[in-house]
Structures are given as C-alpha cells and as structure tokens.
Image 1 (cartoon, rainbow, N blue to C red):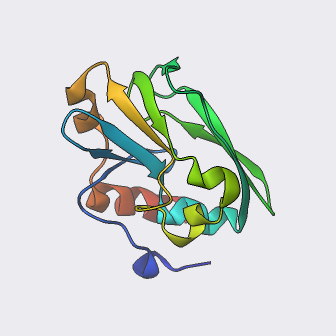
Image 2: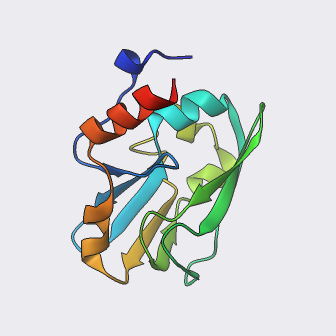
Length: 134
C-alpha cells in the first residue's frame, strides 16, 4: 500500500468522499477512481460498466470494480447521462490500476447541472479527508 505522500492526486480533477474523481472537460465530465482507491483495491480484474444513455443521480452506484481482494461500487460524482464508457476496460481492466487518471477513466457524463462538480473536493481537501481515515 502506498503512503499518502506517494499518491498521485492531480489538481485538475475534483474528488468524492467515495474515492471517485471527476474532470470537467468543457461540458462533459470524465469520471474514474482515485489512485488511493485503486491502490486499496489491489489488482482490478473486472469492471462492470453502465450503458451509454443511462441516467444516474449524484451519489448513485453506476458500476462495480472487481479486484483480487473485493468488489467495490463506483458512484456518480455528478448527476447526468452517460455519454461514453471506456471500452478498453472490458479487455484491460488493469488500466484502472496503471493509469487511473488517463487511460483508466471509466465513464463520461453529460451533467444535469455543470456547477455540481464544484461541490466536490480539491486534491488538498481530499488528502485531508484521507488523513482522517488512517
């Protein structure tokens, strides 16, 4: 397991209490899980993805990650419609471990309310939350 100082937590994404990240991509929101989450889960062997067109509310479960250790829910950081899924994960779920913020993204969402992303945590706030969990 990585120490907090070893985690990669980019500043260009927002974070949830349930360890998802969200990046505002000019009207679309890209979603994945944090470096902390993938490190805690261990080797991810399967990703259950929603369908394009599915609609979810903020906080609602939209999929699961199966690792050698456990099955974990993935929750929506913002409300909206799924516009894309990362089909690479069907054949290569380990991308979530290897590149959680790049090729390991999970979904893209058209948000119902673009300002909702501002309710999420910055990387500094996320680190403070993680310190409280140790």
